Amino acid sequence: MTGAEQGSVAAARATPDLETYRRRVRELVTAARMGHIERVTETAVAIARANGLDERLQHQVELAAVLHDAARDLPDDELVRLGAPADELERRHPLTLHGRAARSLAATWGVTDEAVLGAIKGHVFGVPPTDAVGMCVYVADVCEPGRGVNDDLRELAMHDLLAAYRRAVVTKVRYLEAAGKPVHPGTLAVYRSLFGEEAR
Image (cartoon, rainbow, N blue to C red; front, side, top):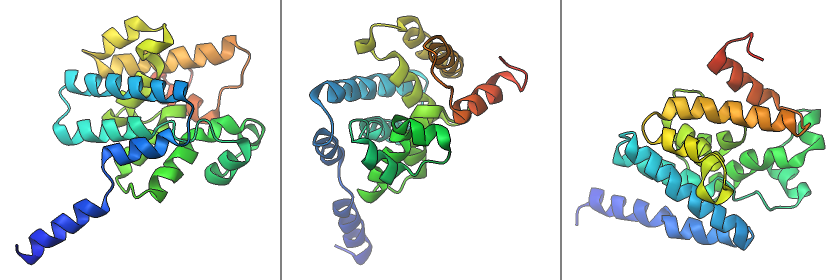
């Protein structure tokens, strides 16, 4: 074996495989949350394939989906420690930090791919409409079958990812407003990037 080949094997061994990440996530979340994560992963990969994303992008989608809610069931003080609140809204509602906190966990666990890390963080507030990996995870999180809603969104995502993403962002904003919950500035920024500054 050449030195280069030995280096590649060593690098592969140093990078945890998908099942290792699944085990790490499973240790931090409830059984119900893990079920959601598995459904999001299956849905996100199906969306990626249906939209013609290549194998490298599909792998990024799968890893980001497995890790996206790794911090979702952590106590508030851990979310604050890992997610570093940026404003008063985030300080008052630590759950808004779970995407950023999951990104921190993933980085600690050895994930260095910025596309994956960005999709993990972005599943809460949204991603740029040029980020196919992030859009797959975001849409899958909103419409995975276990939620019992947004089946039409899942069907749309199988042939028009951007249209599904736009609809998913609208769905999230309307849900928060109807529930009387504050809409995070990050979500509003994504919404306006999709629909214009005068939107809403």
